[in-house]
Image (cartoon, rainbow, N blue to C red; front, side):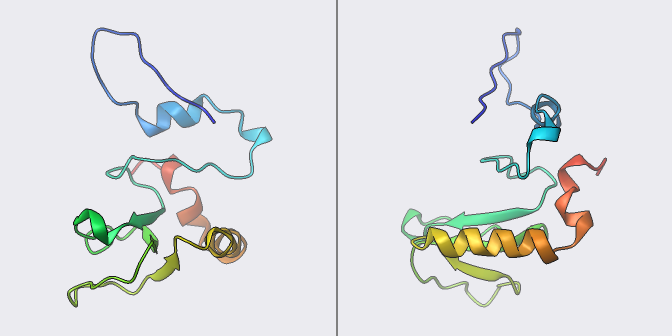
Length: 115
């Protein structure tokens, strides 16, 4: 696990590319990040209907799945994405491994592109 703190005059959130640049990629198979909802990268949306927040995948084409802790109503505005049971972490892990093996190579490196 890696945390980033900035000791400059600005109170700012780290940029994803800055964080990725600090990693030794030769020792990594996978990088999972939390946050960066506005960044251009392939994502699994974590949705908890009890929080009362709207789904993000409707507007974000980079979301490939939704991990949810209960069934939810999408209001008919749902893109066709995989829905994962957040209470079944082994199923979520299987989805990620399957995507890594068979997914689109461009999507896998989206966070590194200049989009």
